Image (cartoon, rainbow, N blue to C red; front, side, top):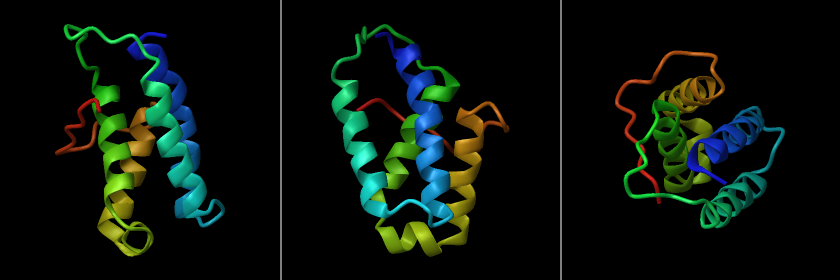
Length: 107
């Protein structure tokens, strides 16, 4: 699988988990498991050091970083962070504008 294929597939899934978690229909443990599964699946992706980043990929990895960096309570209660998570989720599903100050990098 190539980078762009991976990002396209996982973006839809990530958005599902983020929106479910923020609306409290998906537990944090399930979101966390998805993130770790995503990292594991990433190891199977063919990546060349010359493969350029797309804007969607940068936002995707930024979103993954935010979700894995902040504790559960902060993710649920910080309104600015919630807005950022929603904006990033919208963007990676082709439903919004590129989020400001969003520079994700590959793991």
